Length: 104
Image 1 (spheres, rainbow, N blue to C red):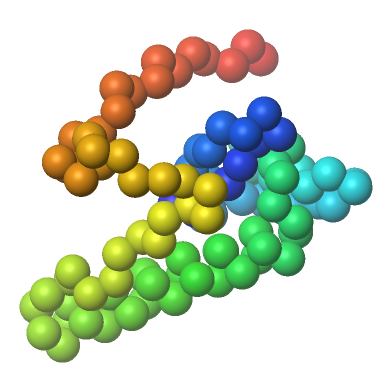
Image 2 (image 1 turned 60 degrees about the horizontal axis):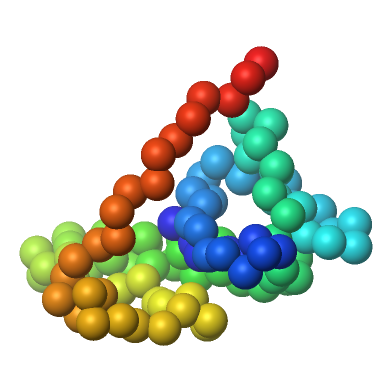
């Protein structure tokens, strides 16, 4: 998953395997394979860099797992605007956000 920022400042994660395309028109719009679109603050080049870094982490972690049996080599970097809170340090995750089906 890669972390991106909506125009309102909220941070969310996107599975790069589901990205169909990224447009800069002039806002950056991420279009997923299911047609969902997200307008984000990051420029197109930064989205590409994050996807490449994600894929590199997957390959490096798989290689490390194969070589040493330990997959705890690479951790997901924090979002540039995200701050660590006390609950993050304790390993607690925030409450899940309820999902709603998209209308066809």
